[in-house]
Amino acid sequence: MAPPDDEFNWIQHSLAGDPEAFAALVKQHQKMVLAIAFRMTGSLADAEDLAQETFLRAFRQLNSFRGESKFSTWLCQIAMNLSLNWRARENRRGEIHSQWAENAMSENDSRDQFPDELSRRVQNALNQLQAKQRAAIVLTVYEDRSHAETAKMLNCTEATISWRVFAARQKLKRLLKRISHE
Amino acid sequence: MNKSELDSILKKAQMPQPPEEFWNEFPQQIARQLNRGSDARVAKRVGDAASPLRNWFPRLAWGFATAICILIAFAIGHWRGQMETKTVASVASSDILKNAKFVRETLAMFPNQVRAIVKDEHGLNLVLSEKENVPSSPPLYVRICDGKNCSSFVTFSGQEIQIAGQKLTVLSDAHGGIILAGDKLVWSSDEQTLAKNHLKIEAKNLGSIVM
Image (cartoon, rainbow over all chains, first blue to last red):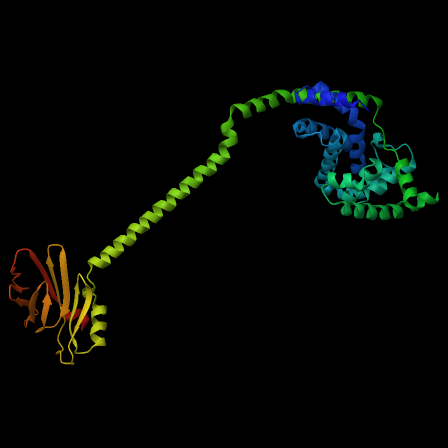
């Protein structure tokens, strides 16, 4: 993690139109953004596209970053909103997505090879959640955000997030039951 | 499976990793894209700054449209006002005593009692006989103007009317001609006799339209 002063300077230089300074910000946060995008899409190729879109949008909207939250939080919100919009855009691919698990074994894209079976099955289970439930799990479990932060990012109430997390956990428990017994 | 077991499983799951060079290449790729777009972006910013009219255009358009609407509304209102004024004027100018329906209904309300319906500067007046002794005959319309002051009346042949400051007897001849006879004037519709030059007299038999 870069010292806050460095990040502040990169932001200031980026605001002045310095792409190299912004590249430093990208380097700092790319793993988080890519991870969010991947958890939301289940595809590394789509995640890379979304990550790129996230950073380009962040650069365009950088003057709207007031510093009221951490830069990472602001970036995370952009990534999540784009991912949710991507879901809406890609709804026509819903069937493809739901069949993702069945086809995962025959996936041609070697880059989407998971390091182990557990990782593949977990992502398969995440893919079967509703997008908003998945977003709640990604932010609260993988990004360690509080329900309050998550609610703010997703522009809904904390109670809504709690319900989504509860419903998502119930479904994940059912989908991942066998793993816990293995 | 409890909550912590589930969280443990979820967190153990790793995502497929892109090649190591991706992490070095990706920030540069973003920077290159920003560089490529910078010319256009700068141009856009300069364009925005140099053309405040573009930002104001929607407001100007709305303002202009509103002004046009107000003008149209004003023009329509003005036109209607004028039309109404003209209508009132035309109604006023068209003497109500020439209105056959009005005359007929008034006569019907007081059968054989109406000696005259007079319209002068005081408004409309009905001159009634105490008894129903006014003989039935075609109503006669007379209008007398002394300069801009006009008086008109509907009466019947043989009736004596006080009008324009003088007493007039109204008579109708067998051919429908009307004669006005007073102390200071004698006027006949046939001869258009002017007793005094400044008086303008108009008379006609309403029999055909009222009866």
